[in-house]
Length: 281
Image 1 (cartoon, rainbow, N blue to C red):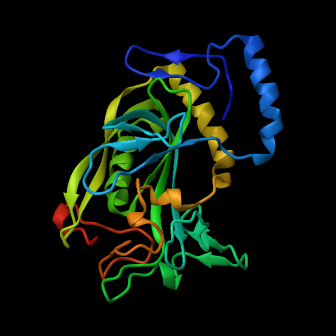
Image 2: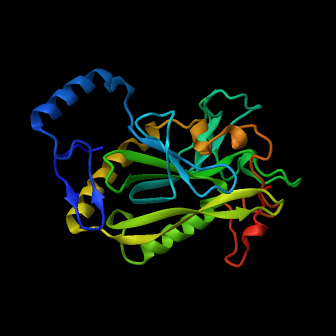
């Protein structure tokens, strides 16, 4: 992400890039010390996790990764978002492991063991099964955002139960005449229940304000930096994005889909469908 001393703010939203307003001598010292850690590469971001059950609070990674903050609302600016597919094999035993195949654009995946290129549209693992057990490939959407008054970049992974509605709402905001880097959005959680009676939290997103021209320009610069590096952020169990292992790879009831769903990797849920008709048990 671009590092700058510029602080772009308005009365309603504070967009604060890393090192904003910091003394130049102190900033130079920090950057010099960080040079020793540059081999890791990629985007430095904090994770936002979904809760289990129907809790209405996000878990936001704090300075202490073992003690996350809980927030009922996330106000922020979306810098970059993309669809993603990933598939894990075997039962989950609590370990952190990489998927056997993943795709950064939900179109072409790569099998990690062989390096083979996989077409997501025709992959058997990305097809809905006829026995009600859903597909083995997990379809998600990653959202990189800056939160109000926070100097860190955050990553929210939208789970399959919310991906259709979130994508629809984001598209509606964009077609309203403003790119995402020009507006403030609010993410919240609402209680929902699957057809099988399982409680879960569903993400909602709506416009919460507009950025100033200066803020929008700064957000666009940040977006360009993320676009160059977003494929360097490893896909792992955190992309299941729940606060415990109940929905982790291999866990029972991981993902259920309708038998007649499309094979493009994402559900086409009709506007009129009720929350209790969602095919997740």
